[in-house]
Picture 1 (cartoon, one colour):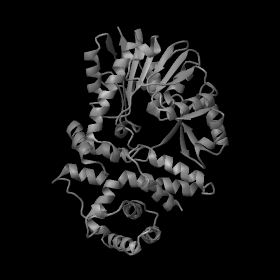
Picture 2 (picture 1 turned 90 degrees about the vertical axis):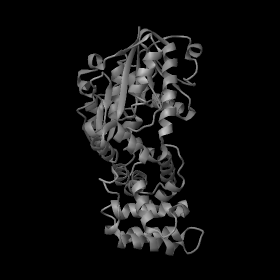
Picture 3 (picture 1 turned 180 degrees about the vertical axis):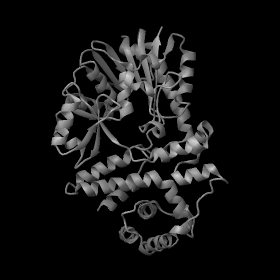
Picture 4 (picture 1 turned 135 degrees about the vertical axis):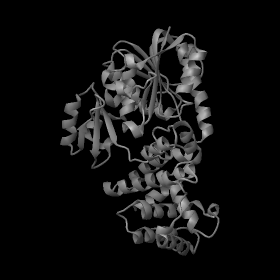
Length: 448
């Protein structure tokens, strides 16, 4: 059953980030008797194939006698699942991976596919130790691309920007299994009390030394959203760098705050908690589903200061809002190159052209936000990418175009516990291979 669920998720793949997760959630809902171990195995298979697909396909290409492009997607995904188990999962016997793949092939409409799949996989198992991989000295980029399963365009970009050695560390870190963190809802409890409540519910968890509201979840017996503490609104799932971002803007009680790309409201609800739910936060997003998620979160967390609206923040906000804000967060859509460990399908979906397009979108959002920022107000620009074009280069472009805006050195304004995450240029920056957390970037501006 877990392998079949994983196969269905991969076969239904679209070029939309997170699509597999939603497919799996639907499959789990349709199979309520599926235990937590099988659910975890299904998720592990899907995430593993996506994380290592480029390397897996390299292996398959060496093992077939016909053009790789001729393999139909259902068969290809059966092979990918099996190869992932054979090469990258120690606890799965090769025979089990092959036999289950053959069974899956037997359920397809076309006849004789069982024999094809069986033959390819048996050949792969026989020649497992003879597989040829690129030479690191002869072609460093290709070696890194296949070894760590990344697209060539990204490998070349990181080598160009950081050098081969540093690029390899970044690639390796992007394949690490991400750790799970939640943020305490300080409107309803303290972090220490929440830790006790979670442990009483049987959760293996611990306080995080990096973020003041963060708790790390080490092991789960079931989905987080089914915990009593979740339904009581005592926490929100949120990564550590995302939690730190809200502290950089330092929203205070009674202030008016605009969250330009509010999404499901992770940062909006955090800012509301920092403001002690006193003031006004306008959460803007173009997507109805995300806004509905924000509405649900504010209700669950007991927040009354957030007003969600559906609007396009790349258009004139001044005409729409007709009021200035003291603080604005622009958590811009980006390439997501800093969160590949959590969303490995980024490797397969994003391209270099996406970075150019997103950089333009980010500029538009920033320029529009300036229109509704009051004098001496603060604007925080945040991305979850490590792309210079979307980060430092965008900051320079923004300042050139907006003479009324000035950059604030975060070394002088960030909380003391976050200062080691501020670089020599005064930017907030986290890197997976250095800080052990997702790659985020933040720049703080003020209006003269």
